[in-house]
Image (cartoon, rainbow, N blue to C red; front, side, top):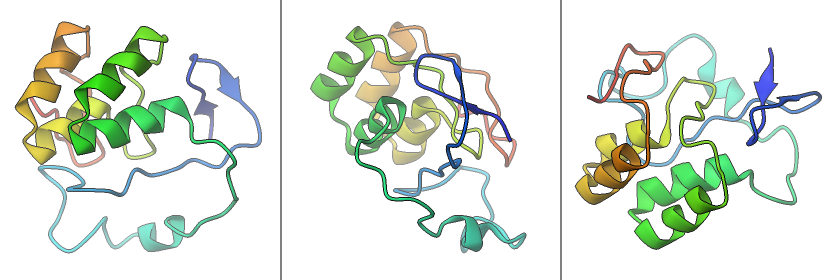
Length: 123
């Protein structure tokens, strides 16, 4: 599996990570991430010293932290980064019902059409 870093570059040797806070997707099946071995993927595979800025963006979207998100976006973080399940910060904010975060992401150029693994676009 290819992993794309915060700057859009291909990164070797990194383990794909799933953002697991909050609701996973508006179209995700009830009771979890699925029945195809996804629970195994949730195990921590490697200790990380620094959290990737793209996952920081997803976390801040989940928390509704506009100031932190603005700072990350101003630093050049990829607003359209997708995790292993195809979710973006916009997916996370929409699933959490954080309207001001959704507005910020759209105003900053977030793509509203990416589809996550469950077929949700969060439009």
